[in-house]
Length: 433
Image: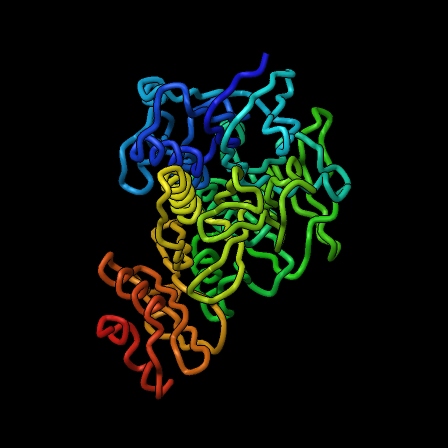
């Protein structure tokens, strides 16, 4: 017997929680909305997993970081969904989607029918076992995506006190987890193939600061090579990491952060795709009028740059979910909403550092400020200039006012006549806009 709902959100991450809140704000009747999630817990703020969840002292735990606390909103406990008449269907994996028949089938064989579907399936981690890396199925090789993953990693950190960790990957997860492992008094070595960390965003100058800072904190960094195999002890636990350059590293714990891929397989051939995601309009509607896609899986028109983009970031997950729900409810009333006009935004926090980036990292760059890793209070940034205009800004250690100022610069795209003058002015240029 199919369970029928007016609206179904498939996926139970950040986007699902923010969509649920927006449905309630817009007006939804009890029994109309269901969230189907393969996780066992109500939607939560995923960024906590690579930061406060793993702190040695007073780590964050649920229910402390359920959505929507990450953006300063109300914390939606499981009871909230019940009170609002929203069915939270947890520990339920959808294995088949038939969009023509408007039905979803779970691994347990249950059928769910909808009138409007919101795809919020997010990303899954890329695993070394996907590439057949030798020994990559050993115990104590961890990936981080869900609260279960974080629990297992936390237990290993406690069990391997003062042990050695190898972090594979030099992106977000690599940098944030290397920092938090170090805080737990673990000996950390980072390994990544690129010439510098966070290469998709950082310039060589920006990266040099973070690599220097991490080195001063005792993190070992090995660049330009990859892990090609793992050996394990008689208990099946990893004990060595073999690198392509021939080096062998001892390891009690391995953490892999080599990227993610959007979870779109359920919908292949049923919706239009582009740039690795599900293609949508500015209201996150797909080419099917009753199917919307939000967050990591959506390839949408980025109005500011006049092109289609897919953005993997919590800020966009929240905002795209809200936009889709506003559009769904407006369409029912024969109304329209404003087009999504997103300003790309990325941030990270690790050790005592905290950076923010707004805009587009294309064109020439101008570095300003104090980017000396040994400085007691380093503060520096970078402007990206394309066609004589500032299109992107990065800032380490900005105040809330300064971060707002750089966001405004990225949005307004002011012209720059003299690059040397801009380097001299530094942050004061942003505060004048």
